[in-house]
Figure 1 (cartoon, rainbow, N blue to C red):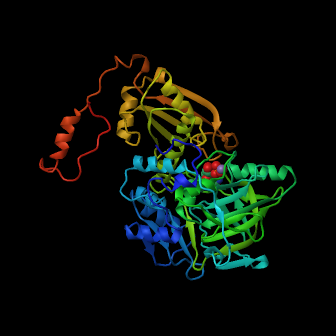
Figure 2 (tube, rainbow, N blue to C red):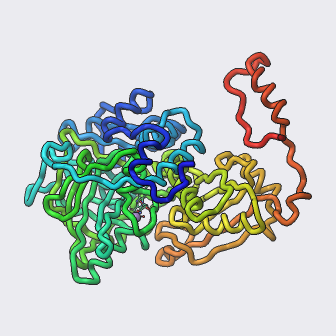
Figure 3 (cartoon, helix red, strand yellow):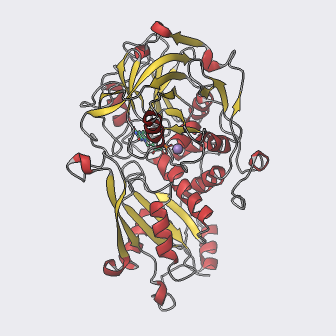
Length: 509
Ligand SMILES: Cc1cc2nc3c(=O)[nH]c(=O)nc-3n(C[C@H](O)[C@H](O)[C@H](O)COP(=O)(O)O)c2cc1C
Ligand SMILES: [Mn+2]
């Protein structure tokens, strides 16, 4: 019901399912602490590999709590660092967008999709007295080195201040504001490197400013609430502002204040914000960085160099960090299995592809970028092939993804046992696999060498649906009769089992 209209305004937003997101990072921290999903680390730790190592080790377990480091060497007392806010916890994602804990991942993805189809533009509020404006560093007082940036991995090229961040730039033609999550390395007390993959929106803005001989203004939010992070790291169409979708996701407009030294704006309740400019040809060697693939990406190379002109921060600021690693220690794994799934599902809805039962980005597939499973009810010849091609190339799903798999509606796309079963019983590889070439990818993909060739990728489209041509004759799947299932489920405890009876996607009607 919720996606009946594509341009739902703020009125409909108030009727969306679920409550409002927490007001800011601190309100979210309180909420996740109440459900036992936060660990405070009071022991003194080093920025140099130690916080990264602790996070990687603590997050070997699915559902491990987010880590708040409260005492960090070389940072003033009170300065803190929060690592892997979402981590591998579906509940922490739910809390971030105002949904209750305890939802299954597909249900949460469905609710996230509904909220992504709402658009609530931000509002500008008076900057006076806003939390982000509690402290200012200006002119030659700008020194970002107090904030607990960190070397995440042994071979990182420096300390990273921006990983779980939100970078705001303005489209020089359209005027709308883009928000993206892009890594940032400390280069000097008032300089940071900004790594942008080919085709990312901020990169397009900078390139367009430079082609006119102009500097590009940039706002960098280094301590942010998870709802803004979720929106910043998802791929929305290039012609709209992520701030509108952040409003939709949070159930209220994002509150922004006017910048001091740029014509941009920043979130009024952010922890740490820096304003800066990237003058034409401003670049410096940056990286490498232990990336979402679980490898160091491209070797050290030129990246954009931002000159920081002013810093604004809360008292006792919290710098947010996202560790990139293999699953489950990767911050963009479960986040992507909800938000990226929701984005692709949302795109398919908007394109009018009917019968989509669910979309799932598996968290173990290179931080959720690598694999997309679409479950659909096949309604016409070519339907599965259409869903595959569009899921592979729509804005929400096009970047990196190597494996796009279509399964029928009786297969839960988030249940890999079911997906592998479908691939092994409904897919005839010689007929059912297509390859797309020269697709949108990244320098960080280790499979292509030399690294300069990497921004181009390829994709396998795997049709693991029953063959549509012979769907009536296709072997019948063994399924439990619905009435029998209900009867057994009702007597589950009586039969001597503990816990809830399993939910099944496929029953015989
Ligand atoms: C933790 C994290 C770090 C990321 N780092 C980068 C990065 O350094 N460079 C980049 O181009 N994309 C990075 N991404 C991916 C972008 O955030 C993502 O593609 C997003 O859609 C970019 O916004 P845009 O579509 O407005 O360009 C990162 C994503 C996450 C979750
Ligand atoms: Mn964008």
